Image (cartoon, rainbow over all chains, first blue to last red; front, side, top):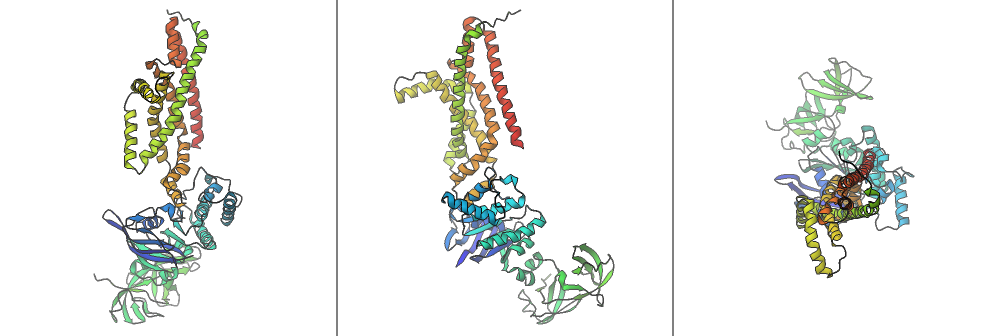
Length: 356
Length: 224
């Protein structure tokens, strides 16, 4: 049974449609992520699921119970949904203990104490329940907010940009921790973020959102390696589109040579009908272009970004076309230098060139 | 040159003490009733019910737009009639009762504005957090918003209390013997009005200045 099911969700502010026909379902225990640039409607959608907003069309079910449909909305306090807010929204006048136990209203004192202690241990703050929120670090506050949301054992946990107030190091570590905590409690959860690293680290399934619509709902692996459309290809991961032309089902010719795909060229995307000679834009990820001193193919170093283990080079081909290449950082080349490169593409991602 | 003669003050101290008690009674009643009633008004004004919000706004605007002296006089004229209608005859001190009612209702309007600002100073995310944890909007207001709002408001509430303490001297218009009224009557009786009023002024200053120092300390502690 689906823990959460959305069908045809529409939300408008005045004449502006913010969420436009979103559908998805989440199985119990799944952690999903709504990923998209700001203004894509992901936060609005989360607020609709939490019950803070009415919806203009469609239906939301939590644990097979309809909680939202146009003109009828179960209020947030009756949804059994836990929420972690961007600014945590911890209660500053209460201790950590009282914050975590706040939602445990019906429970007896002993049961409440037990649950609070259990969660304090889970978030690594055992024995610190007497502190006030302002005495904790940002990361600790974040985990208290999570524990507070988990305490009443909700049907669903919603996390609204939960890591955006933390510095980058902490963000990566904490996103893995938060995932482990959610998994250990068997929680179904939805995370909203614009940061794909966060999404990749946390989620089993990711819905990439743009313009109020889910562009693709898939695993992190597939979003990166099998993007369903141009927007997803561009938004997820780095890469450059280069012009090419279809030779046959498995081969596309680009300036750098002929790309041979292990699987039929993925042209679900508009070029299935066009066949040989069809103009396509081919997505080249930085790891598709490998540095090789023996290669006759030369490119000029335009820009470089040192990243520790590797260097991200921006290269210019003979035609002036720019591409990105990720190279181990001991291959240190100067700007303006010509270096040999080679294509190493496992499967080709191509989109039919839009008519000009 | 005017010759000061303070000799009538020591003998009048017991009377002045009784007057001070009246002043404090009016002040404290107005604070307690004003804050409770003011909180209800503020919540109604911010609430979802447009009728209640409108009534609360009307009440607050009415009382904030008329002079306090007039309100005291009105209530002096109205309250006796009202009490007579409800209880029949036999209200002992009509002046004090009407002053208590007037101040409580008047101050509630001012307190409600302070409390409204205090409620609005609590981030909206706190309400969302309360709702998400399964609390109704009313419970969220009571358990999460108001405790934080009052903590933020303490200095303002106390400042308003100090102003109120001074304003109670206006009850002289209905002849109630509060501290100021008693000082005036004693001075008038003994022909030593200047001395008595200077003395009364000094006492008001001492109390209010001391209280405002306490508020300042609270404020600087709140800033940390």
